[in-house]
Image (cartoon, rainbow, N blue to C red; front, side, top):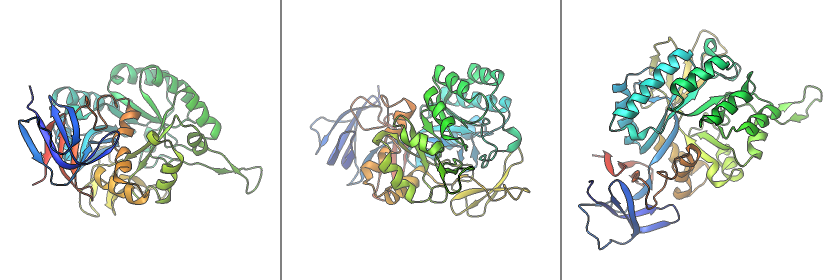
Length: 402
């Protein structure tokens, strides 16, 4: 049985209210009491956080890697080390994300991630995986290699669901690809969250996917084209997928916490227009995150990229692809700090974008995502600039700043 742990003398960002001079008491890995002051009950370990913020742990539901680790091609040992690195920045849940490749390669790597989740002490950090592609729009592929893009076939979809459907929690596809509505239905039927992305879909195509069960948008405003000019009426705009997903309050939207991928006004716009629990912040981070400026990297499949001003860009002989954004090099705590500034939010409201909201989207909010009695003690202690000082995973300390 785990010993009791008390965090006290901090600002607690509870699920229902913010508590100044608050405390959180943990027993057997779960939150058992929240309040102000110091409780009379003794605890095996007491930690005075000295005025810092006690926040729910962060959930990054779209990340391809960090440092030298790429979830599409790294070993179990390397991926386990990556989880420790995520914890340094406050992440207590991470959804490893694959990039378009062959169906065989994708399934093989998903199986490796499943083994990591089942066998590692940090496996609890993985609620599932995110399969991004290969069923995407060629024009909106971004960093996804054109050679792998295709429409979903019954054989491929059944293979993916049959072999690794238990580990996949979200799947990104373009609603204009052939068989997209059927794909949406299959994903919903098997408990996988359909997410629209890398798309130039019409309003009608997006609306059909939403009717079939699509409930999320992958990195909105990056490789998601919205309004279009009517080819038959000059200067008359036609609604696109953006209109469909903004009109439907059932659909959550994720933004990358990076001003290159998402111009700053969009953060305030989405905050204003979407319901409280339908706004999610992600990193879309890649291998290279945290490495020096202009670092050049080469994937095993030959794709090349470089680090520039906090983002990753493609190196390609095709001038239409060379320099394209392929992901960010931001960590989740830095993304949170930017969100707070860009959307002009309180820290409490900003944190919901990286905790309770993604937990709600992923269907894990009964277990984690907020500081509430009965939930796992997935907790971050941080300063006002979102610098992480301590991370707890189910009450166990997985990071502590020196």
